[in-house]
Image (cartoon, rainbow, N blue to C red; front, side, top):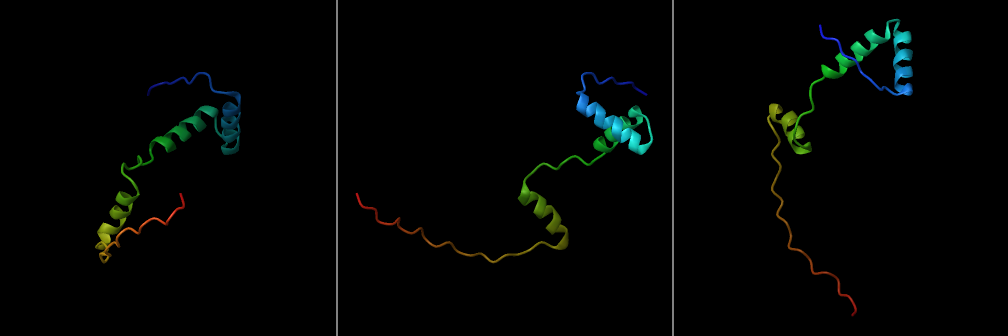
Amino acid sequence: MASTTIADLDDVLTSRLESLAAVHGRSVEDEARDILHAALNREPPRKGGLVESIRAKIAPLGGVELPHIPREPMREPPFQDE
């Protein structure tokens, strides 16, 4: 296994890591390893926007057909005094 050193962690972050390790009853190194493991094993965020995300969830269910609603012509702007 590889060994990694992380330099220049600020005091607050180091203190929080030590506190979490104490709460979980393990070493700081084990706590950091578990945090890294949890963070790096998450599924990466999908690319695309909201529409693609919704489409991906709806498509397996058969999709949704929405009626076409024609747009009305734009109205004239209100009269302004010059």
